[in-house]
Image (cartoon, rainbow, N blue to C red; front, side):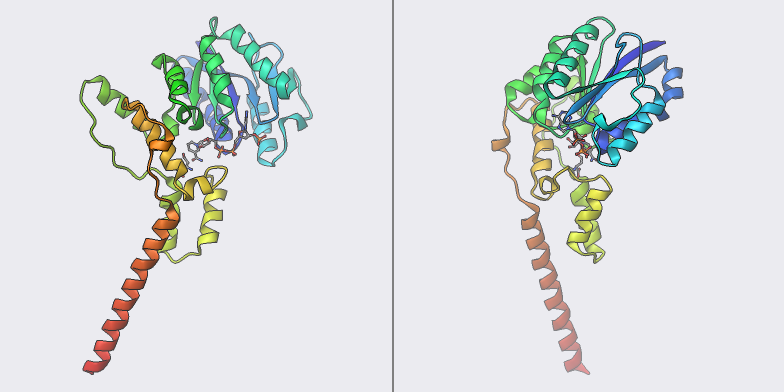
Length: 290
Ligand SMILES: NC(=O)C1=CN([C@@H]2O[C@H](COP(=O)(O)OP(=O)(O)OC[C@H]3O[C@@H](n4cnc5c(N)ncnc54)[C@H](OP(=O)(O)O)[C@@H]3O)[C@@H](O)[C@H]2O)C=CC1
Ligand SMILES: N[C@@H](CC=O)C(=O)O
């Protein structure tokens, strides 16, 4: 059985889903000959890590307890029963992550899974790469900052996975990578890249109120931590930038032209007005005929 150490950065909605998934897939992983060994988890302020980084792990019951604490909005440091673990705070937490990466990166290997929504993790990820770690990202920000950082993070393609940055669970990155490695060119990508906008638009079409629908999208975990990133087009722009860079375009976020959804709503309202006028005209001509 191959044991793969994992350290989770960011334990919000997505990070907790990852923990749930790891626990739910234990028997599947065992059939595949692997076992994911979670050695630590960070939130914005602290790191919870096992004392014996080389042999020990956060047990599944503790992972569930961590998810419960984090979904109640508390900090990791409010965990009561730490057992074989320790809490590190602020700069100490960051230093400890590097220590863990130095210890495991080139020996057993270590996966740094970035499920935060922070641009601050990029330095940590770059150091992780230098220390031989693999990085897995749901967070789009490290891949959408300066092109040099994208280059650094993707310098060894075997050491990075970022499938869920675009298309969530759909194999978008895998498909594109496969097409590119076959030597075929990709000229254009057309897609509906925002789960939030798709949901909001469908619900509006059903006649629901905008503010309610946005709150609902946030509650369901579709939106970014700040839903304005979705509604203003920034989230889609980040996804487009990741795809463009994957296709070899050396562009930055300033090169992406965005149309905010408020413009889209404007168009929708205009369309509705035109439809209403047309219905009124139809009604009037009907009245005149009878
Ligand atoms: N929602 C979705 O369907 C999808 C989301 N994503 C991406 O996943 C990421 C996470 O989204 P989501 O879970 O909704 O966000 P949340 O806001 O729920 O969670 C973010 C987590 O990151 C932690 N965090 C913030 N800054 C740092 C930092 N500097 N170091 C370590 N941890 C940090 C937060 O800590 P604290 O708890 O202390 O605040 C929190 O635990 C986003 O980048 C998003 O774009 C990707 C695919 C799909
Ligand atoms: N906020 C995003 C989540 C995934 O990246 C979306 O709505 O698609």
